[in-house]
Image 1 (cartoon, one colour):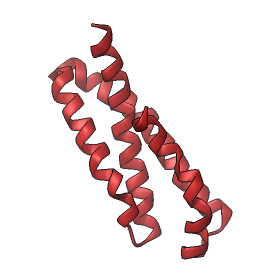
Image 2 (cartoon, helix red, strand yellow):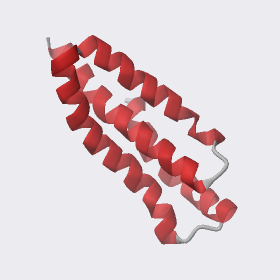
Image 3 (cartoon, one colour):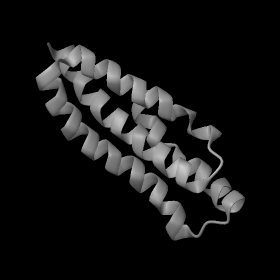
Length: 105
């Protein structure tokens, strides 16, 4: 549950990020878009990877990606946050379907 909630919690910090970096509403909206786009792409890519290299190995990679991107609070510039949101989305997008598949098996 926490893995899915993390990309969506950006909406609570966007007002502070807009003020800190002087972002427009349009520029700030790219942050959640990057996270959700990464989730969509990650679901497809990591699903194919899980079929090829195995679910356990893929799950470890996705958890590693998500964990590394969870340090996004340490970013100092807008583009770094944008990349962190995308990487976090890729990790979560792959992790959730794999976990559900492993639980179903």
